Every structure is written in C-alpha cells, then in structure tokens.
Amino acid sequence: MPPPPPEPPAQPGTTAEPGLSSTAPPVLPQWDYLFGVGGGYNSNVFFLPGGPADNVFTSRAQISRMSRSPTGESRVEASGRAVAYLQQQQDQVAIDAALSASGRHDTGARTSVSGLISGGLGHTDDSVLLQEQGVALPFSQVRFARAEAGVLWKTSSRTTLEIRGRGYYDDYVPPQLVDSRSLRGSLRLSRQLGEHSALSAEYSVERAHSDASYTTQFASLQLDRRVSTRSGYLLEGGVSHTDYSKVPPGGPPAWNFYGGASLARVTGAASTALFYRREVIPAFGLGGVGLTDRVGLRTSSRVGRSLDLSAEASYVRRNSSAQDVTARSESGEGRLAVQKRLGRRFELGTTLDYRRYVRPAPNPPVEQFQAQVALAVVNPRAGISGP
Image 1 (tube, rainbow, N blue to C red):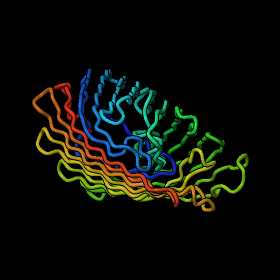
Image 2: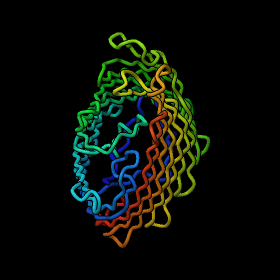
Image 3: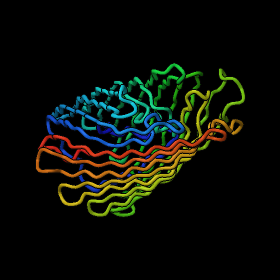
C-alpha cells in the first residue's frame, strides 16, 4: 500500500511519545516518486468470520513535489494502489487513490503557521480513523477527507503557545455502515523546565457526529523528559466531559479520565518505543465516546546503508459503555517489514501482517494473515521508502 502520511499531532484523549529521534529528519528531494508491483497471500479477504482466502497482485504509485524557501516549505503528493484477487475473487479489484497538500510558513522570528489537506478513496483495512478507534470492519470502500491548520507562537525563549484546528470526514460506501464526522479545536501551552524536561497543558473541544451528535471537552497535563540523549519518557493525565444532552440516556459516562505513559530508547540506528494509553475517543455509531486501553511496541533499525527492519505490535481493548457489554471488543495487530535497496533505483520489500478482532459471544473471532513481496522503482536521491 502507499506509505502512510505524516503522523498528525496526538489526538486529545490519547498519549503521544517522547520526542526522541535516532537520526536527523531526512532531506526530501524536490521531486520524489515510487512505482511498484508485488504479490502475496491474504487469508481472509473480506475480514469476516470464515471469510475466503486468496492470492493477490498489487500495484502502487506515488509522486510528490516539495518546494522550499527561507521561510517555509510545501509538499503536494498523489498516490494510488490497486489490489487484484487472482482465484476465488476474480471479479474483485480494490482501488485506492489519495491527494494531499501540506505546508509550513514562518511569518516572523517567533511565529509560524502550518496546514494540511487531503482526501481520496480508500478501504477499511488501512483507515487511520478505524485504527485510532480500535475497530475492525468488514473490507469495504470509504471516501475520506482531512483538513488541519495551526499557528505556533514562541512567546519567550522557553514558552510556546499553539492553536490548532482539524476536521475529518469518512463516508462508507455500504449503507449499513455509519459515516463519521468530527471537528476539533485545541489550545496548547508548553514550557521548557530545563535542558531535559518540558511541561505542557492542553485544552481541546471536539464535536463528533454520526448517528448522534455530541461535544467533548478535554483538559490534560503532559510531561516530556529526556533521561539521556538516548532515552526518555512521557507522562500524561487528563479528564474529559461529554455533553449528552441531545443523546438518549443509557450511554457512556459523561466524565472520563485518560492518560498514559510512553518510553523511548535510541541505540545507534535503532529506535524502540513502548506505550500504554487510556484513551477517550469518538465511538461513531454507538452514540457516545469510547474508552480504550491500548498497549503497543514499535521498533525499527537501519542495517548498513541499504536495509531497514521494522516491527510493531499492539493490543486494544475497547469499552464504549459500562452498561452495554455488546459494545466491547478486543483487537490485536502485528507487523514485520523488511526493506532492501537494490542499487540506486530499485527497492525490494517484504511485509507480514496479522490481525485478530474479538467481540462478546456469540460473535466468533475474526483473524487475518497477509504476506506480500513487492519490487519498486524509486528516486535514486531518496531514502528507503518504508513499508
């Protein structure tokens, strides 16, 4: 699939990770591109109990344009993916397409503005919104749109103030799935406490709409501390309140606590992050917010100049309402990826993915295993593209 877009700021009600990096951010070329083909196996094409398996053929393309100036930069990117099923589902071809534009501009020595807008056609197997919610839906098509903007002021040598707004919309093609819409605004004040520590306070308001509309307010404190140049931790705790005045009674509680902890370690060209999060996020289709416990591990390593290894695993337990056990679910995911640069213009990638989704009885568990090998033509000036 096309490489994911840059990760946005942490969602209110979730916990981010310490600000550590094993290397400096890569300098992207003015023009970048990738064209690839591959094949693999999918043990459960539609992600349904007892769903059919099939061999798949994939193709993907991505092209982007980066513009830089002394006061900022901008990036425009177009990407696409096609997946053809070769045996039982011969008439099925899944096509994804996305277009995005992002930019940052320094309006002065202490002020900068940034923004991002994207939209396209995708599928539920790689929906960022569903991954945030810990929800797995049957394989189906979804139209999506995202927009985000922010202003950052450096009010002093140790203090910054940031205002951000974002909106997203997911429109599922099958009529039985509930469309999702959300608008969010946030205010964040950060203070550098010393050379190795920073304290932040954030207030956010989010308006969510699907089968019902409701507003949630978030307030939290976050401590980011670097123990050394190679390790650090992040702690966060907060409280949220959801206005259910226009929602039928019997839903999730109005007041909820959230928070968590993240640990990060960098060793040479390898980085590892371990986290636990108690999250408060919109539970679209269930008339309120969802309470989610999430545990995860991510690690990546560069071996030499041409080989990247990465692995990640996560477990999510979701409870939308203490009164409604049918809204509870558990899911687990794991991924192993190997990317090898072949000369200057080719890249070989292998990925293994596993997903499991469990809901209360009598619903049977759903499992899926995928394996894929792909060969891509890449820009010789660019680094390894990632899985």
